[in-house]
Length: 160
View 1 (cartoon, rainbow, N blue to C red):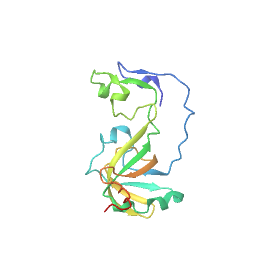
View 2 (view 1 turned 90 degrees about the horizontal axis):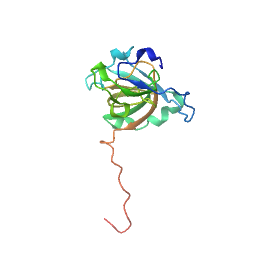
View 3 (view 1 turned 45 degrees about the horizontal axis):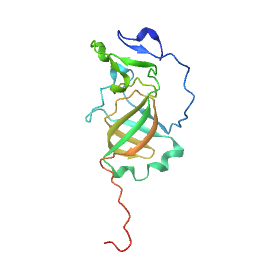
View 4 (view 1 turned 180 degrees about the horizontal axis):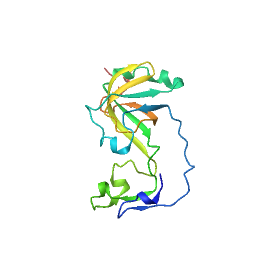
């Protein structure tokens, strides 16, 4: 989405060629009831609707053990976001700030993140609450919540 007609007053954009410097492999797709950006809750809601994270078949074995966590972090590609705004005016409130000072989905590399509550796993599907992305959003990665995951250091020989 790089249509200059939807720029708000005070916003600026960068005109450049489409990026060709990175390659991502989407590991799944996210299914939500949100069909438009206006439908999406801001930052997700812990008590929001149950949404489905579908992990593509080859990646299903990577879900082993995920259900040990109450919360997980999802990274997803905001494929319908603009990528060219340098400054933005959130909600047209008259205040303009740089893109990197916002959590807006409009960014040079539109990677979204969400800390969600894992309701349950059903095979290659995770049912979660707390998402704020559009239906059909490509899934980039899944990680245990960093607050719940603390790797144990290996024991040193002779130390008990």
